[in-house]
Amino acid sequence: MGTVYLVTGAAGHLGNSIVRRLAETGCTAIRALLLPNESDLPLCGLPVEIFRGDVRDRASLLPFFSLPDGDEAVVFHCAGIVSIASRYDRRVYEVNVLGTKNIVDLCEAYAVHRLVHVSSVHAIPDAPHGAVTREINYFDPTRVVGLYAKTKAEATQYVLDRARAGLNACVVHPSGIVGPNDYGRGHMTQMIVDYLNGSLSACIRGGYDFVDVRDVANGILLAAAHGECGECYILSGDHYSALTLLDCVSRLTGRKKIRTILPMWFAKATAPLAELYYRMKRQPPLFTSYSMMVLSSGARFSHEKAARALGYTVRAMEATMRDTVDWLVRNNRIDPKRPRVRRSRKKVKA
View 1 (cartoon, rainbow, N blue to C red):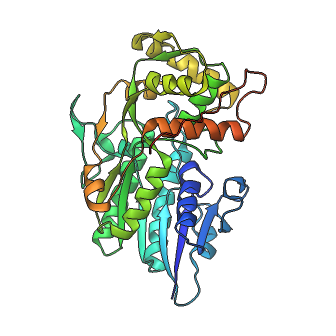
View 2: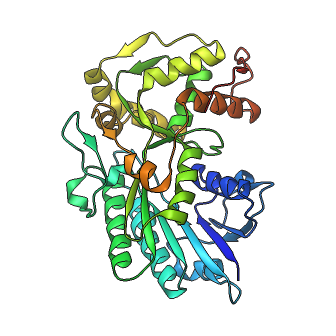
View 3: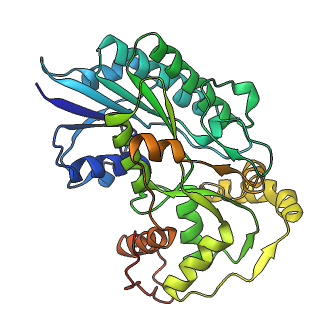
């Protein structure tokens, strides 16, 4: 009897990081769920069996869940759409809510050994300004703001309801993810790319809680091994301003520091135009009305519960920035017409 690890959204930033972490621990029975036409480049060279399907289509998921007799499944559900856009996008609801319900229902039907559902800190209502946000045990979409937050809250409550009915499931809430191996265009990765390529010359004073994607992936594996059924765990890092992160990249690469700091009122007023600009470029928007609200919220998140119950730890953000820049350079994400980025040789204790 063996354990097979099933990872949804496996080509995404977090998904492929989970597969990498599983491989590092010696696991070879790993199944990755990718969309029918999705590139498998993020998983190249990893010991993984690729399945094609769509979480919105339950029938397409059946081969992914079908295991040889005697094997047990541990499911990491991280397929989802992260959206800070202002426009309503039905796909966000279909993937984040209906897709999660399909995964949960199939976990019950196939009697999986354990489900770890990847929610988000956005599913948790904001604490009073300056207060620290901690785990809660009931999620109400009407208590959070924004389509993404509402869909994550609804999906999380569905998981917890089924856990209370007998499904062996727990929930993790990552904060803002950053780090290497982002083959897509995650918001933080895009910000760093734009800065290094010279198209980002101004910044705002706001900030958020950011965490290395590899630390989140490790926290998810710890939740599978040690998390209690029906419990939630915040997997956060620490609060950093956007300017602090870019200053760190500047130190590592020799790029000029950003000197222009936009007032929040100006950023909020021009956010609709910025969103339109990025939509025309077919890139994820960096500044929207929703992201301005998030960056000015002063949100603080505690991962004390995950540290105590799971053994969760986080590395220094300078190590994360160093590894992210090096990965971007190696993968030709920096414009070759720009001056060469200085690869950091400084070893930062993680």
